[in-house]
Length: 195
Image: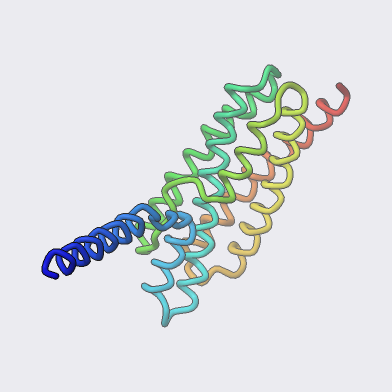
């Protein structure tokens, strides 16, 4: 009888260990960096809606910079078109500078920013990376037009509506640069559509 009881305890113990190990194996999926940053800012500024809106704008800008830098690097390494490579380099250079400015501004305002590419950014990168040749170049140009149009709209909105004067000024000062990127992307697309 004792042996049966002991065996039962051993089987129960082994079952619990297996359940425990299974639960450890099913690790929770890592949260999207943008969501983590937004949650942190929301917790900090829950009672101050104006700061929360300004922090969301800077989180968006950080997300845009991270994506543009990675896509610019991809364009430099994958494209065979000299103009696409040049545009990719310009993206990396200018968005790295912008990322540094956004980071400094966010630090001064005690805002949390994402530090790696978001799930959406990774998905866009993957879609672009699947293309090659002229298809890659055209997809790249389309992404740059769409992305810069959205980014300019966010800058224009923040330049008028941000509560923090420094955030408004930064947004206002960056509209012209992104507008130049957009015009460059449109020219690039026109030239690629001729091929």
